[in-house]
Length: 158
Image 1 (cartoon, rainbow, N blue to C red):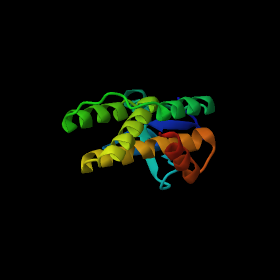
Image 2 (cartoon, helix red, strand yellow; image 1 turned 135 degrees about the vertical axis):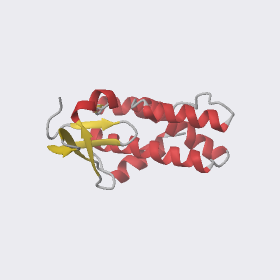
Image 3 (tube, one colour; image 1 turned 180 degrees about the vertical axis):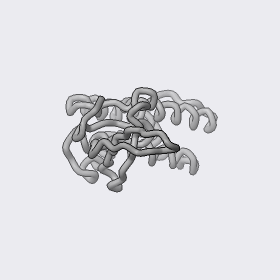
Image 4 (cartoon, rainbow, N blue to C red; image 1 turned 90 degrees about the vertical axis):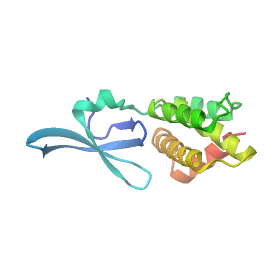
């Protein structure tokens, strides 16, 4: 159970702060939702409280863990499938896992691949999505703004 003010990560969407807990009647059934505000684009997301565990919502990483994320970003690229379709699926699975370290690997691998040869439209979308997820959590965990987080990520990736 989370409380108002808690910072949480929502797989595939990113991190945010719980602003409210609301009840809504949907199809005649009263359900409770966490209302999360995300630091990027000032977006608001409603998360059904009964599905939090199933969805994979978790507390954001600590400041110390941000250092581990940057260590992953500065490491060498991990082996990826040569077939773009297999690579796409593997990267999507990593993002859907909700594990920030897996997301960091996706960002690192795709940034480095993009520097070698440009990414396909699909892979560019994955990179942008993974980067947004990563930035949103780093902003909240490291108490920084979007520009600082983006600059640090770019500097760290070799």
